[in-house]
Length: 503
Image (cartoon, rainbow, N blue to C red; front, side, top):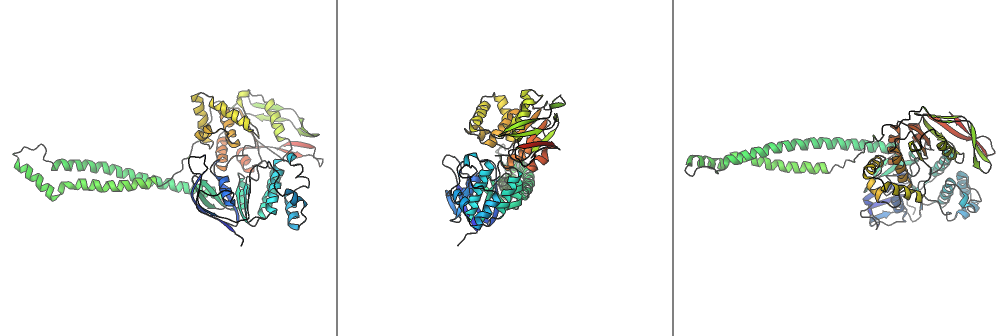
């Protein structure tokens, strides 16, 4: 019997090397169709996929999933098992999948020369050809241009099983997913719809909780003030009933005190105070039970982050070699001190080459240029982290404040020995911000970043007073942050010549 669902029954999971559980008491029902998985770096997205696919077993609880389940990892270093079989397969279903994803007959033999996008398409083709009942995919659109993303989106829409998808591609999540799972450590919250609808619901929930918290806090403070008043009244009542200080022969005063004790008239204050203490305890517990997630303010820009020069770049028309008799031709290029430029175009059209040429041609002091390349290898990441550790305490504190406001927890980053690519990008940007940059150039800034981090980055860059040049396939990201478009395109069918248009 085919399973058309995945169920988590009170599942908890933690790695042996970690001091705390990654997931605790998670209960979920995941139906047929696509479900997005969203959360911060290190929150447990990949772990959740592996639990759903059965490649990990929970520490406590149970995961009910299909025997025919498959997990597609983010990395594509190795040739997928059975890719050769798929390439040789003549069945109609295999031919449709190969056609949808543009799989070529020699890919298994020349895997080392394939792009990341081609490798991901091959990985997904094999997975869909095997027709698993549960398919869990980790970041299918990293490094892909718009055409590649559209190809993968269309192919995934044809899947008829239970699908789980970790992605920072908001358009993919919105068009594909019927619900999203938000990992909010150590639990998981399911919200209907794609990422946009889910984040709107999360924001509304947060505002509701904040309002409820403020109302309860106001009521608690009112009770506190009343408790102080009653405590003082109880003290006065006790004083009126006490015989301390009365002369032994003052029988009238002692008799009056005795009558007050019997009548209980002056004991009312103490009784009322004791009753209020119970109400205060209940009110305090009510406050503690409302979990309001902390939000971090931005406001991280320093004075001087705008150049006094009006022109940062003035480049005459020219061309750049792209290797193997391929070239990119560009017109006259100008960048002014407040320009916000989007550079887009297909993979292999010379965008990164052009960016490196621009960095070397800017009329800006080197310390006022913040350039973040598309890929930063592990050794470079470790060198950047070592550079951060060597900073003086005052500068380190300022840097970590910026990192925090870009959506990362500083202590976790400083404790790591191998910062993730997304965390390394934040470090480089934070280092650049401490020098009050005149221009920020980022090549694929949203690659490797989780959605909360992308939102933080968007907010930080939207407040940026300096010039921006952003290379990205994330249309929403560019639409929010830029006004000028540069676009690369192929000139003819030869595939060897590309041109840059300034729109």
